[in-house]
Image (cartoon, rainbow, N blue to C red):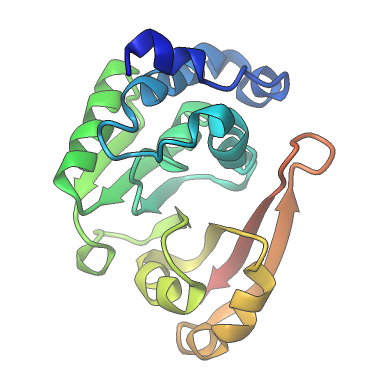
Length: 213
């Protein structure tokens, strides 16, 4: 498929995009266009994602941007969802994108350079091998694994009193129930599901938030 054909299949930018990205919208458009052109052939997105790329992936990620502050790690960044999208929307926050696969690290690094994102560091590593000099203020992840598996990978990276903000699907509440053993072991408190984007996006985003002590 040619680049022009791929672009022709890309979802039209929703009206909400400009409001959510503000003065960063042109950077977001550039990233989305490049992901649409290269994402499938580089194994970053599936062949059916172009008609819903903005709605299901870009806006689903950026709607959570107000939740972040300070130093944030995105675990399993993959195509840059949510890490690169959030870094575009929040240039005032320092982002560390953690990804174990070399080809995805290459993609992330290329995009950081092309988009001139001075607030992003890309680290090739598994989450369990990351050893930050100090804990992160917030750790996030999207579509990585179930909470009972994800909590042991993410909670140890958070500073005392910091937060988890994990983007999950419609089964988020059930995942919390299934992960009660891990919630207790890693001393999570104020564990809840926040639904973002109601009345703004056609598909809301669910974020599991918790404080780590």
